[in-house]
Structure formats: C-alpha cells, structure tokens
Image (cartoon, rainbow, N blue to C red; front, side, top):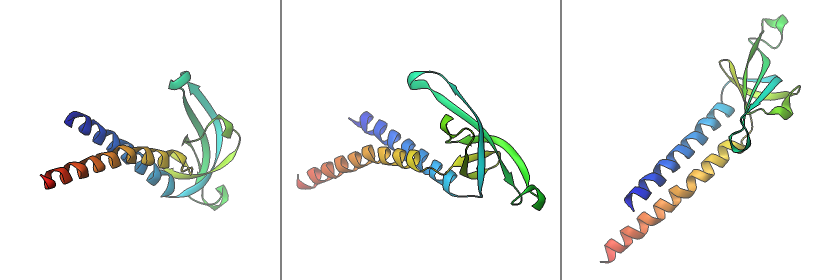
Length: 131
C-alpha cells in the first residue's frame, strides 16, 4: 500500500512539474512569429515523434532594424504547420508554440493521483481520530 502511494506521488509530481515547465516555456519570454520550414517524423505507432525546424527574426522587427534570422527547433509544431507562420515564445535557439493543450493536459492528469492521495490520507486521518 505504501509503495503504491509513493509511486502515485512520483507520477503526480512528474506530470504536474512537466506541465508547469511547458506552461512557463510556452507563455513567458520574448515572443516572435516563426515560419515552420521542415518537420521530420521518426518512429511508428505509439512511439512516433515529430521534430520541426523553422526560422524567426530576433533583435529587431526586421533585418533593416538590426534584427537577424535564427534557425532552430520549433517545439510543439507538427507537419501540418510546414510553410505556415505561427506565434511562438523564444528560448535561445528554440521556439515554443503558444498552445496550452499539452501543458494543461499534463497538469490535469497529474492532479488525478494527487487528489486521490489526498483523499486517502484524509480518510486515514479520520479513521485514526475516531479510534
């Protein structure tokens, strides 16, 4: 029983932590508009992974204003975005899409075992108090 609680707590912490990390990466920092140039998909079935690259301008609104083009990874983009311009948040040579679906899904799924653990702990504390 204790082992299951520890595993559930670790799963909850990892999922909530990952969701918060992605939320911060995607919502804070300098914003830009990136063009998705290429996406490569590896693996198959459940293990499919897509890696997209693209370009964006930093340091000014255009090359004439002192900006320069950066080419790098666009995290959160997919093959359907190739050739399109999307809003991103920048971190070094990586751009993060502004989508909230994955971070919020991770946080929500992490809350399930966390709430379950809290309810179980509450039941145990009530049982001890009444005996």
